[in-house]
Image (cartoon, rainbow, N blue to C red; front, side, top):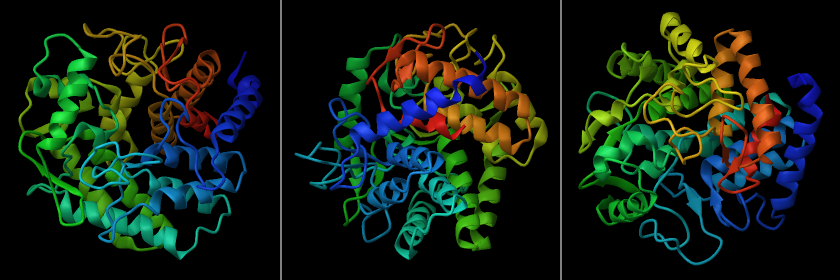
Length: 382
């Protein structure tokens, strides 16, 4: 069946998944009420995008809900707890770490769909980005993170040198994640600002911050954000582009090693913002290539030809709906209709075969992680 044939099933499934986890009193969906019973920042942003695509006004409430957790400084936490503290920093009711600022893209799409966000939400988008620009920039001007949680790609092989692994071990990663919390420094409001053992300027985080700045310019009419976004995109092209892999790679700042250059799908996100058409074309050419990231239910997180590719393993090759969506946005931005259509088809096949899973095996569509998970509903926005 074609993607067009599958679209009604994708839209119906997306609405069912979101509606089943919606918390009316709180105005948002936990990613999965049993497995992930809290609010996550970029999950809620993808939910808002899906709500908007479905023509449901709950997208405004979902975005407003996740931005309502920001601190007085503007910092937007990556979690708000719906129960006892999760111990992700000193704050009792929310995380002290952040996540990629997808909220600017979600806000811009909601407004484009006719929604009235209100001044508080728009101000929340701008203040969240302003915090990042003021507190998370290297002397060169790149954005940095102080915990892998902040990238959203928790157990990516790009972090293996920090963990000291020769082979992937999820338990070792979980223990390391918790140790990093103890090694993090926090400001007087409880936001993470530094670390004694981990700091990195990731290709993905820089690309998504640059994209957010450009979206914020569209949202607010403040051209300063367009300039900031373009400057950051150019800096990533200069400092993070890897000619050998044809992708952007991470720059370790404290700790780390050569494995931060492992080719992964989040190294392709620079296509969202690069001003270099040749770089964008080279990246987009890998997305549906069977020797690259293209798979029957793709896209795979690692190239299928890579020695470490494991299609059934967490962040080691599995397909992720939110990354599929972002790469489709990049393809559309670059006018590559064929790649957009290819990603759309793979994503529709994947969400339906997996039952709208958190992630899935890109070779056979087997659902992995939490099934269902709300952010898979973002397929409805393709």
